[in-house]
Image 1 (tube, rainbow, N blue to C red):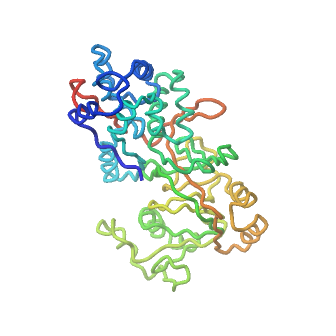
Image 2 (cartoon, one colour):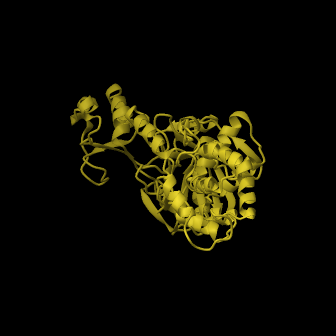
Image 3 (cartoon, rainbow, N blue to C red):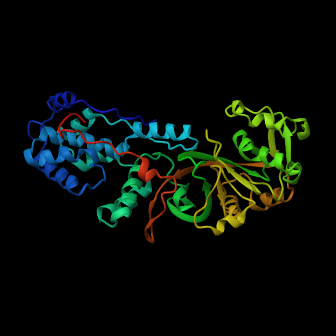
Length: 424
């Protein structure tokens, strides 16, 4: 598990650069070749990681003090590994947004950067590229975006999107980049890559601005055919119960049943016997409802005919939808966080015919035809990466998308030291 780097004091760095060991350069371990190499990297910010180190870099250009250059190298490795985003500051913002009724979550996969490891590698004569290589993000999109960043391909608002997308690529999971799903939320699209090659892409619907699709990685493990919809308590309170109070036959029309829990075979409750208005009162806002709503399988089910499950703490998954007309919109932030698929059967058939599912495609079709709830396991779990790239690079070029959740703006970057020379 990667862990967050917490910063380094100047005194510790000065001690490290003075350690004994193989000495191939000056008093701080720098050879002329290493200095020239790192100066080239810094001058162009070749890895989009100079960030708050710019004042230190400017001080170095005036003094050519290699002790300062050592501190910049450690900071640059940290920014490459864990992004230029001020993660603790962002988490406070996210907490406040959740308090204000905006449901959002952004997962950060960080790693520990050891100053002693970086500086020992320097003193042993490794090139700067070799020193930085362990901290390069494994996300394939990072390398594609970095090519455009180095070429100065974006200006103005596009440059900000490109830079912030690079930072978010740095903190994606290091694992699961051979065969995988990539959901790009601002693009409203999911892609499936098999052994690094794009096999198909499908338009999607994502979460509303107040019910945002979380950004995270998980493993797809099974598929549910003819699913029921277990209505979450918060959606029941916000939408389904008010609809019932306005239209007494609403549950019947929507093929919804009322139970004491989400066990589909348990005894049903007559909705007319439940004091629904009571559970809309403020004191019930954060309490679990004693009655659960389940929508039965059928053509009108909110989840459609199939859902693709990658268990996670956010109860988010990919699924079919009974509201296909919404795909006519270019801006498709309509869900409560789950990812609705324009062509779920394309995905299902591909997984079945290419051996990813325990059942073959003819068997899957037979099970669908029963209209009964059934589960099919994946032979091997497939990674699902839910990402947020407002700039995305593919074989056709660099593309920009609306910042629908505001991450380009609200994610703060690390601040430079006020005097340009204090500790990192």
